[in-house]
Every structure is written in C-alpha cells, then in structure tokens.
Image (cartoon, rainbow over all chains, first blue to last red; front, top):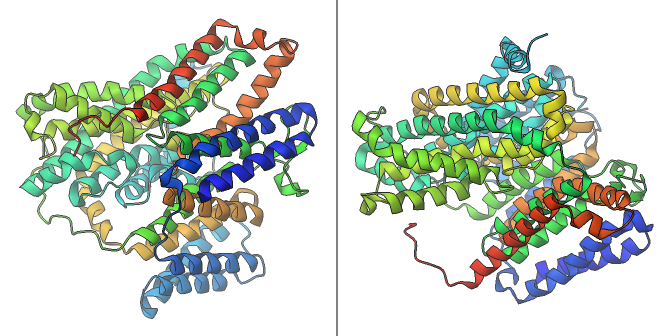
Length: 125
Length: 497
C-alpha cells in the first residue's frame, strides 16, 4: 500500500509538473509520470506491497542519524578525528567492545586518510 | 602503426596495468567471498579509486573485480552454504552437500577451474562476436536505437520474476531520475529545484554506491541475526580426476552457452543463468537423483554458467551500450568517467581499447583460476571477519568514494538517499536491476526518440515502421507478455531445492 501510494504520488507529480515544461523537454517525463501513476494502481492490489516490518529499526535509525550528523560537519576540519569518532560510535552501536571499536576505527581512519588524502591527494578537510 | 589487436596487447603489457589487474582480482575475490558484498558493489565502491589513474589501469582493476567476484562468491556457497554473490545461489545446491561429504577441496577445485573455463570461453565469444555486432550496429540510426533501448527496458519485466509490476515501477523511477538536469536536446533545466548541482543530472556512481553498498549494509543490519557456520577444516584433494572431468564436460559446455546467451540479454545476470543451467543439466543427466545432494555435474553447470555471463554481458555493453547484468551496469558509469562511451563507435574509433578489454578479461580469468586453486583456504578464513567491521568499512568507503567523484558533499547526500531507497526497496521485495537499467537507458531512449521524430518530421510511422524497429517492438511485446503469462500460470514442478 505504501509503495503503491508513493509511486502514485510521484507519478502524478511528474505528469503535472511536465505540463509546466516546454513541449519538447516535458513530453518524456510527462509520459513516464502518467505510466507510473497508471501502473501504481494494480500495485494497490498486491499483498506483497502492503507494508513491511523492519527489524533492528533502532539500529538502522541510529546508523542513519550518525551518518547525517557526520555529513553535516563534513568540511569543518579535523577529518581524521571526526571519522574515527563516527566509526567508534557505529561499532559500539553494532555491539563491539570499546577496545575493539577504537582499534578498528583508528585503523580504518588511518587507511582512508592515508589512501585518499595523502595517496590520491583528495581534499577531505 | 600497429593493428588494433596488437596495440591492445601492448597496452596490457605494462607492469602498472598488470598490478592493477592483480589487485582487482584479489579484491574481487574478497568482495565475492564475503556474503553481502557483491561484484556490483565492489565495482561501485572501488571505482573512485580509479579516478587518479589512466583508463587502462582503472579498467584493469574494475574488470579484475568483476572476474574475481563471481568465483569468489562460489567459495562461500560451497563452504558455508551462503552465496557470496547472487550469481552463486545455485552453487550452494550441490557445492555445499559435496563439501559436507568430505569433497570441499574438489568442489573448490571445480569452482576455480570450471569458472575459469566459463569465463575464458565467453571472452572468446566476446572477441569473435563483438566486432561483427558492432559493425551491424553502426547501421542503427536514432529510430533503431530507440527500438533497442525500448527492448532493453522491457527486460525490466523479464528480470522481475513474479513481481512484474514492481519491476516496471522501479524501472520507471530510474527513467524519472534520468530526466533530472539539462534536457539533452534543448538544455532546458528539468527537476533541478533551482540547485546548480543537479544541472548535470544525478551522478550515477553515488546512486550505485548507495543502492548496492549502503542499502545492502542497512538490509544486513535488519536481517542478519546469527553467525555463519564455520567452514570445514579439512578440504581434501582439489584436482578432479579424468573420470570426473569426463562426467562434467557436457553439462559445463552446455551451461557455458546458456551463460553467454543470458549474459547478453539486458539485465539478466548470473543468478538467472546458473538456475537455468542447473535445471538443464539435471534434465539431461543420467544421475538425476544426485542433483541437490552433491552432484559434480550440477556444481560444474552452475559455476560455468554464472561465469560465462561475463562475456555475454560485456558483448552487449561494449557493442550496444546496454548493460547485460548488474556489474556491467555499474561498469558503464565507470567507463564514462574515464571518457569511454560504450557503443558501436567505440569499435570504430578505439578498436585497440576493445582488444585491451578482451586481453584484460582473459588475464583476469587466468589469475582467478590461480587464486581460486591456491587461496581458497585463506579466503575461507576471511569469513570470520565480524560483520560490523564490514558494515562500517563499506559505509565509510561509500561516503569518501562518493565525495571523491566531484569533491562535492551533494554527491554524498545523493548516495545516502539512494542507500535508504535501496534498503526500503529490498524490504518491499522490489528489484533494483530495473531502476539501474532505467537510469542508464533513459537519456539514450529519450534523445534518440526525439531525434528520430525530428528526422521523420513528427511522423510516428516514420519512426516505428522501420524494419529493425519493428523487430525490436515485437521483441519488446514478447518480453513484456511472457512474464505476465508466466505469472498467471500455476508454479510448475522443477527439481530446484
């Protein structure tokens, strides 16, 4: 149901917004939007799209929240420190002990920093 | 001036190219052997590492990953009954029972040798067939290309199994995403929401990293509860004897042919090829009762076919610009970043590069056979790496790799959004292949259709009435109706475990 609703809404949005585009650039997205809206209708009958259960949802939500936070502070300096902290928190979240989490995080951060920042000269700061 | 085949070989005989190839095969074998890490994910996540090297070196690494990952997946399938990649699902059916009966070494030997045979035979097909196909494709105008892309997109339904509607919806989403950015003909901005980052469209590589990397990690966090069982300590002999070779030869040859054909079909990959080949080998075998219980014929058939997909998929990708399977879909994005546009013009303008690709694939296959025979045991030990280490590694590599594309955080946000979508799509059992296909083929389809309509002065008859277009339209109708007909049939009896 949720999947079908999402595709119906997206299809209608695409078809409606294509009207505001000039005829050439608007025709293709308009046709895709219409097809998407039409095909979402049989998807309402599909029991398989009637919702799903997400196990470990708190762990997934926390993973995404940490990643969003990490991206929000991206480019503010101290790449290695922020990255190591991000990885330690993730590893703790996945049940690793403090000592293991810190060791793995430091090794991974060092590998990425050396590889990308110094080896490939990518600006990560 | 050297002929193309020789110039292509000279490019390969560079120690740096060979080093990247070796690294690619090893990384591919590791990605393949670790459950949840696939060939497509390996290529997507490691493509950013190739931005700083020449096209030949980058290609060597990515093709090495492709050739290494599929047999690598077979190792896990045989030792712990978990397919390392989707292509090795059917390898578990006979590989694991054979390993449990004390034949783990023999099963790993077949996995390395028959996989190598399947890859090399399909690469020979690529070398022989690709140039004539590309020559024929040079006759294609915009109308024919529209027909071809339409046929390619219709395979969205074919690869979606019984979830045809979900598959087509995912494909339409891919097409919708492909319209973001400047219109290909008039440069009119579409769906950019006023942001300059989207004027060039949605970056393909971050979407791939998100769908196949981050999305898979999130799905594994949600799904995995227990630990993998330990692989057997004693492997036993690895080399098959003459009688065993004689027994598996017919099924391996037939499976190689099936693999090449399935690989050449857009979006159909090793998972489909190996299931078809296993079923075919069982039907033709004198020892049908052994299938599913450790049959070496069944094992060889699945190994040969899922690896023979490589040559078929590369043929479609290089000659027509249409990916034959998931990894080649990601490879197209990597090739474009290196300034290589797959399609018939590649054969006319860069014939030497095509030969370089052929030689690299062949060398990668030979290297993989060596690694499969010599390093299956250390690869099996890698199964003991804790999942959280892999998850955090893939997440971090995905973030830094997406950023490395354009030094833009917006690409990382796109990757994260694609990852969340990939996770939700997996939970809703929505196939991701069609989405990738739509994203790749969308711009080709739209621009060729509009060019064809301009050339025929707006008459649809002038576009759809051309003989090759009619052929593709009929093939499209068949590929859409066949799965619908299949889905209405009651499930037939097969011998699949």
